[in-house]
Length: 170
Length: 170
Image 1 (tube, rainbow over the protein chains, first blue to last red):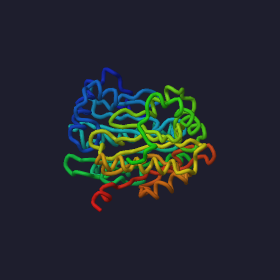
Image 2: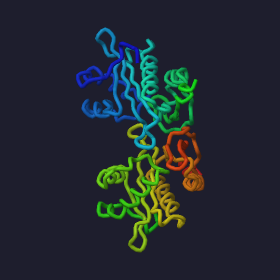
Image 3: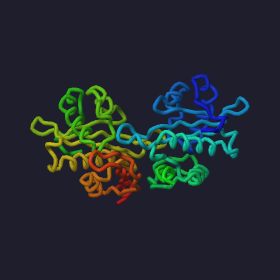
Image 4: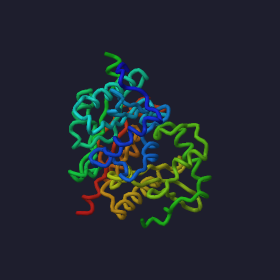
């Protein structure tokens, strides 16, 4: 929660976030969103409302990445969170994803969640898989062929999980 | 698709489906839906629109169970389906769940899906787990403690998968 570049996204941010969303989806490697969404439709999908939230990482007036997060399920499942991430393709390799990931983990810890579940990490997105493992996530299982990658065809979707009760009790 | 008791649900069916939904959720053992939903809110959650659908199993004018089904994800994930099931607590042990499950598998086969993913099968719901295994589903992985069971406390949620490409190529 201490990264000064990360803050809650506002409606005014969307014009800068939309190209990141559009280009990430158009690449066809990481998200199963339709590729013909309007900016308004995409905003409705990405801009979370409470109890979730959407954040951006902004440096020198430029938005380099975004994350949305919150409970993965309602009611009897709302003690486990989830999150999604997008980094500006022009800002890759600069640690933007890691900073957003660390922020998301800290947010869930402080909010008292017992864990964080990623429902669908594309197995060929090896940079993301390696990053989440570095943050302590484990692969719970892989649904075979559940994603049609633009480059690789049918590839698996990992379910990944970070147990925050271990962190708390340590 | 040949079970004559199973048909698409209509808005007129909801008054008979609502007690099944309400009592299933209130039991607190299988679904993470809020327990204070109005009938209208519950209908919005359970009655699917295309490309998904909701069906009922009706015998002698009485609705004994219901299922909702359709693509688990949009776009690059829409070749894998999913489904959810509820059986009238007064009609348990009569094969209603199995008949709905078999119908759902047949529907996905005929519609050309490559597989069916159940995202969150409560591990203490042993009757359901055994039924899905009997229909060919495997446990891909289990997210530990992701459901707060009324009786058992924190229990795991299984991700289960049925590979329909094996069936087609057999």
